[in-house]
Length: 240
Image (cartoon, rainbow, N blue to C red; front, side, top):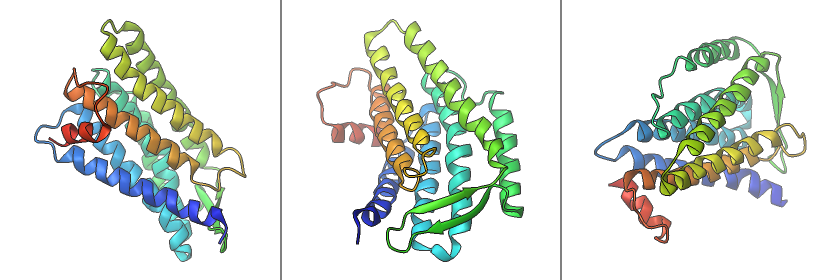
């Protein structure tokens, strides 16, 4: 089998397990803050995204249905949840009125996806490499608004918080979601290249983002947690 076969299966499978473990660690906490809640919701969306990506390759007979779930979770749900998390992380109310247009569009896209092929026309799976080719329908334009607006506004929120921060430790923590957002946007850009979007690069980029967010939230829980400590110890703090 070519290496692309193993990569196309290993990346979503390993990401699925990683997201699930992180989500369990977060929801097991005795006290759940807005940051933990929005982070857990982000992880849940990523579990759905990775699961649908993996199932497209394993269940080719229902690839179109899995493709619709993947597109909705990746281009609608994820940007909205990321926006809510960015607000919560910087001390703002995550339930902003700015979420309403995105939620309305997402509901509309879900209805359209269930009733027609205007979101995803077809999905083809290479039988040898297991690489995926999604034929996107015209309704994807609606999701383009969400995909562009909410990550961009999240960047504005994080940059404002970074510039206003006075404590060096707090400024350092804000760097993690900023770097993570760069990974997310880079992963989304690869979907614009026909040769690259066949691979689950966007999933790998979002996994890197989730790891950075988990590390940043450890500092939110225990402000002076030493930087030199091992990340596994940080996860133990996260799970307390």
